[in-house]
Image 1 (cartoon, rainbow, N blue to C red):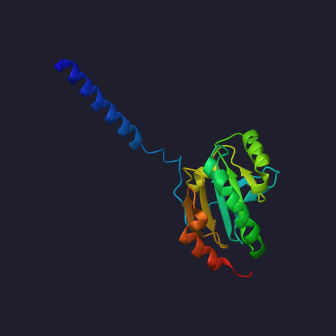
Image 2: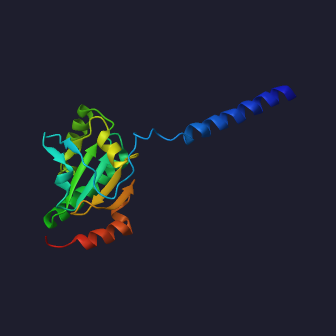
Image 3: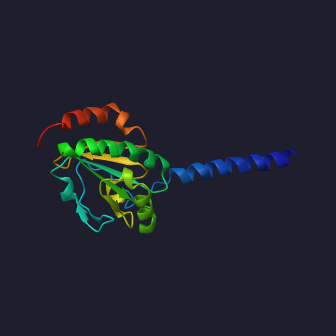
Length: 177
């Protein structure tokens, strides 16, 4: 009986050590870029075929949303973003959504299903390279860049529009260009 308990305890310890070791292994260096304070260079197509680059972001304050179609939090946040976009597009603030980790067919299906919440460009990061360039690890991730391409806010998950930092940043953007 003591031998059986010792074997079980040894197995348990090894399992815990292996589990923690797997979690502690960092992703390869090329997998995730650090989140830069300025917008990285990129070029990506929207679902309508329009090419967007980092130059499209410079000139207008821009909220970028990285999402996946299977993210229920993303769908919930898109409802709020749609209202935000309707209000803010008149003062020169742009919004773009970038889908990754899914096929183009899945992204198109999602965009069609939730078109009422996506009145702004939806882009498809085919191979995830754009998300990696921005250092995106989870969805939704929101990044707000000012008109010179400087990142002012990075936010993960739900509640962006209730967050004081975002509210303060937006209050400073309500100006006429």
